[in-house]
Length: 307
Image 1 (cartoon, rainbow, N blue to C red):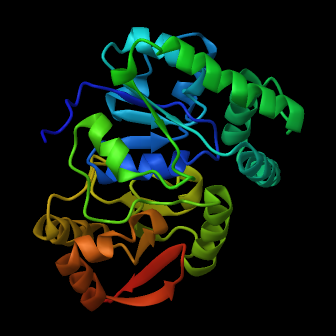
Image 2 (cartoon, rainbow, N blue to C red; image 1 turned 180 degrees about the vertical axis):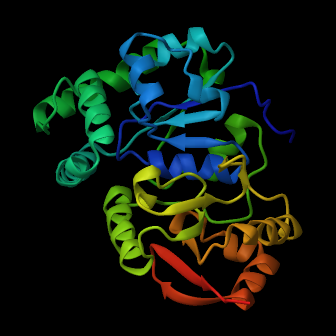
């Protein structure tokens, strides 16, 4: 299969906790540069002003989760020939998960005013409520699914309904996008926000403020993860994430180049644990260049050996 045209945008229309972070990770693994839940000021201001020609899509091919979920008709017009993926989930399971998710975010967001500002806005747009309300959230979920199905009823080639939480994954996604899927397990980012909060705390306990570190996360962790520290995305170009390495040698060459920035640590997020098998030579290289000081189901942290 040929790779999907880079001009074709892909929008994940599922509500939070329907497998949206797993979908974003899967798209990145397929070579489609995807961002999960962008909440930067440009996106905030554009959505608030009704400008759906989102500037973030100059950098990314795909956006997933509620920042785009309610705007499918406008995005369809702004970006013709786009593909849309609606992730769905068993209602009882979703209500339990979104309730906990909302509780965790409201504990977390006071430390991150930009996120709080964005989430209060988009939460009100999508759910009509800042706080979790079971009846209202269930009503919105059913209405959202029904409206999307109605909108795309004569365009089945443009909409994929995907139940990641129910076990669907690579096969329908690869067929829908006409892309060969990776030889790796489909990602399942369960309790993503909770894991991110734990991972952020663990990283801060190990990496002192002001230190420089290389982060392998495929842009999944957001800016708050590295607050107070100098993060170098991997791969890096002009200070921003530049996608996946084509092979082991590209990854090794990139690491050698970044040594000039004097990174003291290398952090690998759980979304990129598949790198350890896929880029085996690079993994061996990192292991020889560094000492592993943390390894769990959220993070692997290496301290770079001083040469």
